[in-house]
Image (cartoon, rainbow, N blue to C red; front, side, top):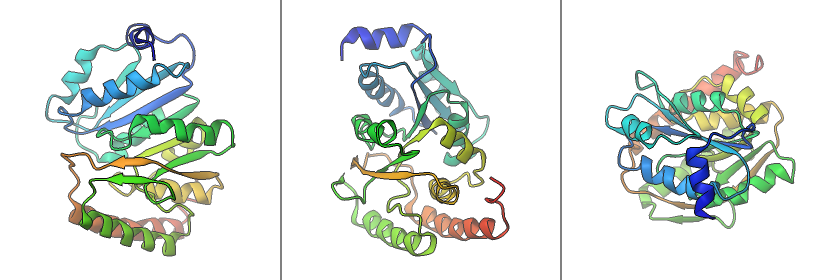
Length: 256
């Protein structure tokens, strides 16, 4: 990438509809948000298409919002929530505001390096998929620094999801997913879960609505400073499994 591409993206609003929107949910990310934005912008600016970056803040109480505002990037939009509504809530706000032909949801910790986008895009551009899911469970994926406890719990939850939901995706929770705009807006408009399990609900909805989903192996690095309370989130995940099934039985998703 030429530095000129990066400088142009920072200073000059794009004239055309974005080819790609990248949505990052953020909650108290003052330590990581600027390096993550820099890593994403330095890579994507050189890919040869117009794109926008959306930071969906989830009621941060630290300096996250101030730091993003201070950057003053021309093609970076900041969406602020007055209160913390949950990661799923932040992602939904960002997705529904996105204008790109393709929309990437990416975690603020950059655990899946932005370079992995190069693996997901061909599934939509060339192969006709509606969704490409970055996966730590697909053959060829690489994980680094993940604790034994988290690997064990994730494996157990994946087996449970496989047997209960039959959606054909082994890793529903990786925070690196690419959508066509039509699929993203339809799915997230129907989303009901605002917490950790929103990914599973989105993919369950995608299966119900007949969207084509590619599971793409990616490199994933367990970034230090994770805010995930593993025990608490596992409890919520199990509760949300039942909630998704109950929603389906009540016809909530049929109306989507």
